[in-house]
Image (cartoon, rainbow, N blue to C red; front, side, top):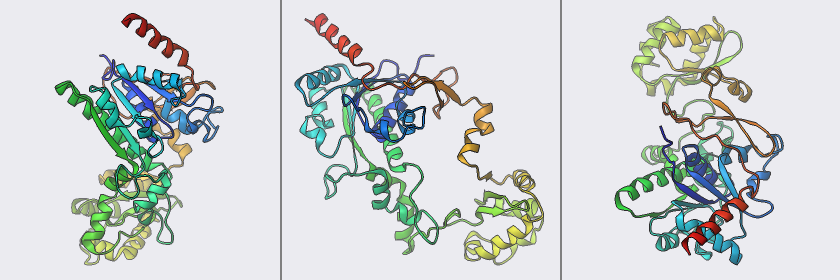
Amino acid sequence: MSLPLSGITVVSLEQAIAAPLASRHLADWGARIIKIERPGSGDFCRDYDNVMNGMSSQFVWTNRSKESVALDIKSADGAAALDALLETADVFLQNLAPGAAAKLGLDAKSLVARYPRLIACDISGYGSGGPYSSKKAYDLLVQCESGFLAINGSEVEPAKCGLAIADIATGMYALNGVLMALYQRERTGCGTAFEVSLFDSMTEWMSYPAYYATGSGEPLKRNGMRHATIAPYGPFRTGDGRSIFFGIQNQREWASFCDVVLGDNAIATDSRFATNPQRLANRDALEALIVAHFAQWDSNEVLRRLDTAAIANARMNSVEEFVDHPQIRERKRTREVQSPTGMQTMFMPAITIAGVAPVMNPVPAVGEHTERVLAELAARKRSAA
């Protein structure tokens, strides 16, 4: 089977995480990605750290399978080369600083007016219009503005997410928009100009807490590793001193938990715990009761009982334990990928298509493909003359 995006060419004027993540997902399934970088230093994400044999872990994550072309797009030659690339490109992504793309005529609306079949996406911090449209934005700052920190963390203090969730959400929505626009172009022959912002992406993710707060008149409380509105749901210590996690989603699971795991059906109908609202109201007493039962068994036995009762559960793994997870190891979910500093072990894309292997090509050096791509443009110009 051919790759789903074979024949699609993407030009991406990208930096950091959101746009590079979107384009890398397109590369995974066959699209050709031409990454435009600053001559010399390139994408500043290259220098976030040097832990991957001298390369940045975040850059390696978001930039495999791409061709790096170093262009000064503010120069006449650089702008001409970029225009030549866009003449035959299918998709253009950019996440420059607020207003920068528009000044250069590289905003999505302007480009689709010039190239009617082009799919062009502007990625920004806060979107066009509104009082924040010209404000610079980074992941943590949008976590703050969107209220995410207000619901994340312990009862004592808020905490940022350990992942760049605003960037990741934005990259995935940009990917979604590109795929929708490609499908629409198949039917209409017309390109699409669209935008995605970090703030709008986090607004979607924050819908449930916002609806809860406006509907109840109270903010969703921070609960650390517990669930804010479901009990029992979270960490519980076992007899060997380890903590395991499980969650009850409905009354059927609650009855099964009491019967099979705790071995005491009377708990299921105890007036303090019979329904989820009652369990939430009496969570401290409920958790103390569960921990008292779990003290009889080690973590493996508790997990076995939970599995028998069909209750979802998990261990709290370290990142090192995750990397060596049997589900990854036994399903062979990693591949060796070449980079300028040697081979890198990388996870495979999350989508599995029977009979189709995703692209796992090298991570490029800055400007590694500049000469080749410019030579292609020159040859194309000669053939058209």
